[in-house]
Amino acid sequence: MGTIRCGFWKLRFLLSPESMKEWLELCKEHNICFEIPNYERTKHTIEQVYDAYCRFYESLMATEISDHDSIRVPAYTMSFLTGNKIKPVSSFSLVPFDYDIYNSEFNRKIKTIDLCLQISYPKSIAVTSEDNKYFTYEDIQLHEPSGYPLFVQLTDFIKKHTKPLRFVTNGVEQKPSIRISVQAKSDLACSWIAKKYGWIIK
Image 1: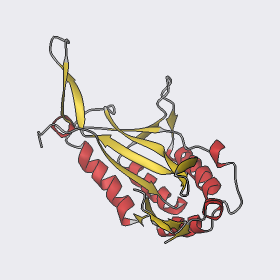
Image 2: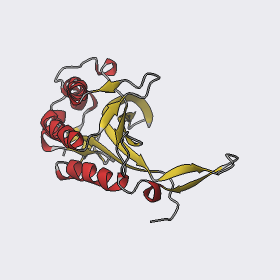
Image 3: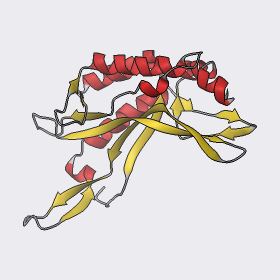
């Protein structure tokens, strides 16, 4: 700890609604607040986040072609308390992840879909100089020591309930950086996406 790090810790995942509900309950236990990063910073309850995820999941897993492009999970800022602060001062990011589907014969992108969610947390933080003339990046764990352990706790739950997604299309095995739960994998295998693009879920 103390070494300047670049980038983000992140995890892409697709949970069944049942597992997602458990994960959101874990977030609730830690008083995590879900906000849409708009001008009003609209807050969503755990129930609203869950309902939005269920709509996304149902359209993704439909057996017949659905209007999935119009069903999007909102991008959320997941604010949480650090130290003895009363108001949340740090946050994770929870956003839908766009997955590109390619035509293997011509190596041409033919479709982009929201296939899963991605949770992320920055490894560094910008610190402004005392004279406000410049800023430097410092290890976020020096400033928010409770943030990373909480991120690990949330992602460990996901990892415990998922395995890496693997599927074959046009005879080629695909290994996207996405983790998927057992029920979600079963649902995806029967979905319109698997049928339309010839995905054989492993």
